[in-house]
Image (tube, rainbow, N blue to C red; front, side):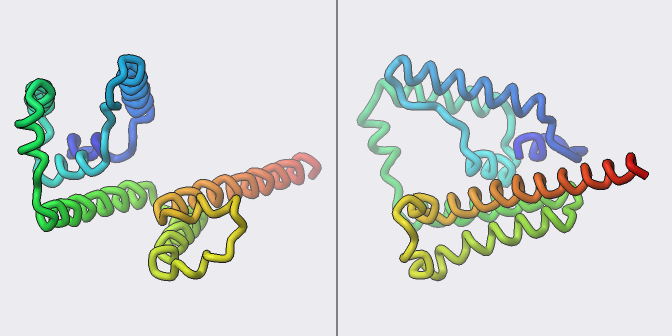
Length: 185
């Protein structure tokens, strides 16, 4: 999403840069944990907010970091700034979630989804939404399965990953059979 927000010519994710970013994030979280601090982690909602506002300069990040350092030394000012009315928080969440969802869909659809991808995405969304709309539907599950059904996000993610892997294995086996048949002929 960060790449897409900052590059008008964006066509597909750069996996090398994403890997480097994940490594840097992991190192920062590890150092925070070793020093007894709170993890400083990225957030998709913050990326969406940057995309929606168009504010993506690194200097904004530097200024925000300086502000957080200042707030770390003045707890009363931090407490004052942390008081925000619930309707404002709700409005921010709705605004940010709209951009998160649209960015995610744009990224998914940018790679010309085939039948398998469409099935995986649709099934995962259906299961995730069904958990929120019909929570009693999953009330009779075995205790070891319940953690997967406590959050619609968790359920949708697990379904998407599991279906994707299952269908890839089937696709690989089909390709091998075709290849073996071609070799035999």
